[in-house]
Length: 463
Image (cartoon, rainbow, N blue to C red):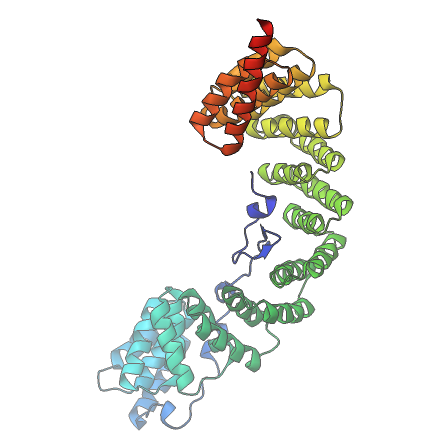
């Protein structure tokens, strides 16, 4: 059997609902630190207390004053002057100020070099560790970035950005508990920044803490800056509802998104899945139709599988509605394998609705043209031929079936049963013997004994 359309919408952490999996349809953006200007304020207001501030000799204070005067003339002149004044014995404050100047000029390589010198000379230089962390982060050197930011926090750094960056780095390193802790500290320090909530949400998703996620997404929905963000948070909260087996709460979220006019093929398809699981067939059909019509470029497998589920559960008319919409939306672009699947579904609908046998046979023959070795279709055609008392036609189809290894056993049994119902017992005997050779069962052996006795009586009667 084909898997349900839920399995084609895979969630990062699969949750099971009536045997079906449900995925996240909106992703959490963890690239906040790459936004232009994000760190522009990092070199401002760098105040130090106690041992966190390096000692600056009186003559070096004059060097720094001269550095500022040189910068006013030209940046390059200021840089060259301060570089010339730095020695292994000079204060780390000189290295730090030169690093800040390179940092402001977006020369991250040189900035990192001088910040490293600064912390080497003064190991408790909190501000230098903080900026060194950012330089490492720019090069995506997660390990050293984490070490630098962690050292800065150990020295007393408690601003939200530093904790937020630590959370992001730990998340990248798959240190989920450390990441969760860092993001929570960032939220405490700055509860108004949505990026920290996003990061915390990602750590909770990774841990499957869906009860906490429901509450967290509620806060995020309240803080959403626009309708698109609100939609994403509603959709992600829906996944946590599903994980908690609160399907109708999830459906309520999907309906809110739908009424916002921001539903997409994925969210409407999953809404249909939930309604179908709740046996709300008409609501499911409406959602599925909307899902198909919203995105003619989507993978055809998803709506085709939705139609398959509908038909397999015996909702013939609703299944036919989906089949018609699929054929209309995808038109001539429908894939051959999906066209074949839809033909099979249409044949099942025709059978279920007890349509004229000519309609059913038409579908089956079209399937057979595309798939000559379709055992199930051959079996159905054999049954239809037998129902019309066209025994030779029925024999023809059964003979084709038993040539197919996958259907040989089933074909032999059904072939023998068809002959037995028409009192052709002696013709059925070798078929049942062959079936026992393929797979022995007591039931078939008993049936064979009965058919053999009937065959003998028939022969004796003929004498």
